[in-house]
Image (tube, rainbow, N blue to C red; front, side, top):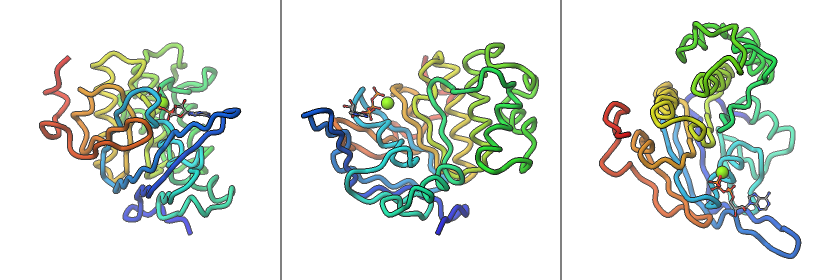
Length: 242
Ligand SMILES: Nc1ncnc2c1ncn2[C@@H]1O[C@H](COP(=O)(O)OP(=O)(O)OP(=O)(O)O)[C@@H](O)[C@H]1O
Ligand SMILES: [Mg+2]
């Protein structure tokens, strides 16, 4: 059963571990994490390099599998799913945004968004121009990635993710290649998606930016060491310091 209805979307990890065998060495990337994200929540994941942030996101997005524990996304138990079911989840429920934008260099902004819709089986469900307009790029529809700034390219990547209509949005360091102000604007765009009842999970190194979140999950050595509202409460972009 795939439940992608707006009231069923939820991320639930229980006692999740992830081990990698590298030759004789056993690497523990995740050491028993519990995480629950509801539809409409904007959650930022913080933590030093190697603490398990990307591994967590990849397991939620069915790009990787847990070694032990239970993973439920959009009402589907991933620990119990066939490859076909995991493929359907990636197509129909989850959208990824990466640090390096991952746009197709030979496609215009509009074509990149259309391609995202094709891949997720949502061709024709919305007008790519409208979606690009909604992320502030209505005047760049025919531009190729190399003709756009980093922030603009990331907006195209967000538009492509939104065009799928998928209800779980996962972003791994989406602001990593951007200056602070542009990065904060990208985060604000992602925060708006949570207000549209999506579950939005964003990994960042930037603690200041994380103050815009509903919740901050802090990881260290494969564990979640804190999970709660940002220090000082949720803060709008205009009040952040840079
Ligand atoms: N395919 C793999 N094989 C072996 N070890 C891995 C693999 N992927 C990740 N790891 C290890 O798992 C741990 C967690 O990695 P992960 O990529 O989740 O960290 P991260 O918090 O995203 O770090 P960064 O901030 O540098 O991106 C690290 O020690 C890493 O070396
Ligand atoms: Mg990472």
